[in-house]
Length: 455
Image 1: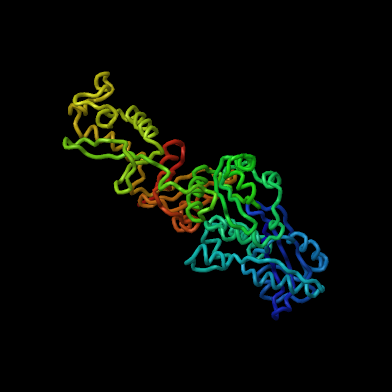
Image 2: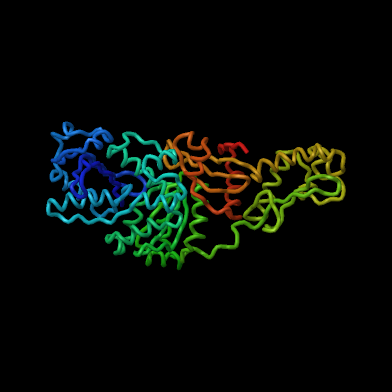
């Protein structure tokens, strides 16, 4: 659990500043679950430059509560949480100073979004809150007021959690939270999980990830693990101290994140990955008569394929449908072995490419439509799917036929501006497994929105 904090002060000499406004949002990694926002009477003068910057003046604070009146609420909302702030060293110092004046020792673990952003979003021109969120397309209201800046930091922190593919932030937070060092009852873990699409991570008490999975219903899937009787399920039930999760909204995003997370974290309870999650592929070649032929064969990383399949049978079934849809020749598609015409020609469903009655140009034009539809080779595009909330969408970026990564956005200008799009995208590896996942999902979900980018 995190508390995202922003504080406005009077300015002045080091350790003599007073708080004029404070905003705290309690955040569970997915949504804000509590908040506290208040002006504070600092009982001291406000520097003129601060008044100009924030708009907060002494008249506004005359009837505001003094710090000792809000101190109890601050302690309660931040208890057992990690304090997160943009330049956390400053906000944490100010809080500790105010509590020290009351004779109370305020101690919290902290995370700084400036340091996290420098690590996870390198090469930004500026890491000041205003410039950074603007470059990421994150809208900000009430800049230099505690609530506006804290909300912007919540959105920034959410993006940083997405980009933290190694789960360093989550693992470290579990290690730091003492209440999770003792193994809770498994039923309590399941009760706290949502019935949503996403990726889930099973942790030991020290934060180590021991299993990663994806599901359209995380609560049900984890419950199956915890009630299973297989050796792996029993080992989970013994070792697991906590389950964290990422909401993805999109099943495609869940599949891509699961595949990458398993490769990066190598959890001890995930089965050793097969060298690939597909076994067969669709290949094309031009015969000596000039016709483009299609064939389903065993996947070979040395050869360029059109698309891939988990089994030969699924590949053949796909090709049979494509022959019907694009009016292709069974013989030239490897589905009908013959030295003469194919069966479809005999029933007048083939134009006769099998016996050179149709010209290669005419036939290849239809094959080309198939190849362009199911291969994203050399394409620049964004695949758009559902997001984690109603108003949000996910974006999967393909550049020059290469999968670059994915991200979430709320506003259309975030994907229409290529610089902002590249900033919000979490880079991911373009391996054969990821290509298979994307191609397979595109085949099965024909209503996906695809935005073509200018070359």
